[in-house]
Amino acid sequence: MNWVTYSLIAMLLFAGMHLTFKKLGLLGVSSAMILFFVFLSGAIVYPTYMYFSGEKISFNNEIIFWLFIAALLSITANLISLKAFLAAPNPGYPGAISSFGIIIVTVVSYFIFSSELNIIRLIGVILGFVGIILIYL
Image (cartoon, rainbow, N blue to C red):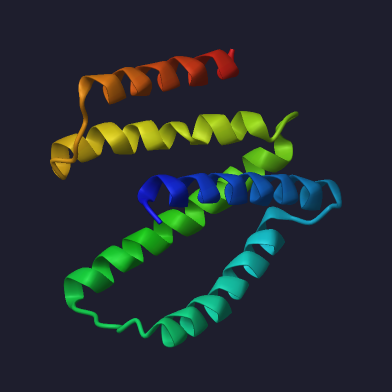
């Protein structure tokens, strides 16, 4: 599969995950409990996946540093995002607003990683930004 196919599948899975989170919130389950179960499940599933896929584990100080930063950002972002999903009148609103992060990643990656960003995709980024503003209003 190519990156577009993976992205489309992930989009559908994330949509299902967000709707499930909202349902759990309506059932009275706290953000912390939802994330506890999600991360606990991941702590069980991912090592199993890595074992059966033959993925090698290797670390150095730089990798450990960036893994720690990624974990800290992920835990914090997930908790705050989930609180927004549970509090919003429509879970799509905070999802769309938090998706603005992808626009930031697209632009910043161009500068710090020399990632591709042509004029057509830049226009798409701008239109995405306008869409986020319209949802917020």
